Image (cartoon, rainbow, N blue to C red; front, side):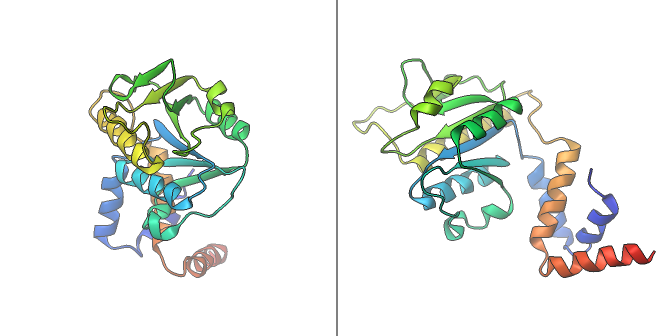
Length: 221
């Protein structure tokens, strides 16, 4: 539960335009879909996927790094890491178990004999969209645990796309359809408050000193 007095205190440090921007952006944020990238060797690709999540309204992103463990490339992310929640996992099982517990179906984005074309994908179910590398794709572990398979229709000679391009196409398509649907896809009131608090903290310089002052003043009251 967000402390509303604390939130109001922090938001006093923001401009009115900034606060209005937060509210406007949060109206188009969703947890209905989430994105997962697995063992992406070139971390700028994972960062580019994060940027697509932010641009198109996906609030949660998960990164499975069993082999490489590199940090997000802040230059490529272009500040998106301040606005998208990143969850890191060191195993496929840990990530999938967490997502299934939250009610997500596991969707592998890869050509498969039982795959579904992007435009035919059922957006009504909360889904975790898994992306692998262009060269190796997703691991067999994910493929075996997937509830469904999704692919982008292609008509050229090339049979695959770079992960950041694939993710951008899929995320844009699904979030656009979601926002034009009658589904209950938006963040809850509590989730919006949580994001307002987190984003206010991310926007304020010297936040640790300001927080310390606030809680010291509380003790004196």
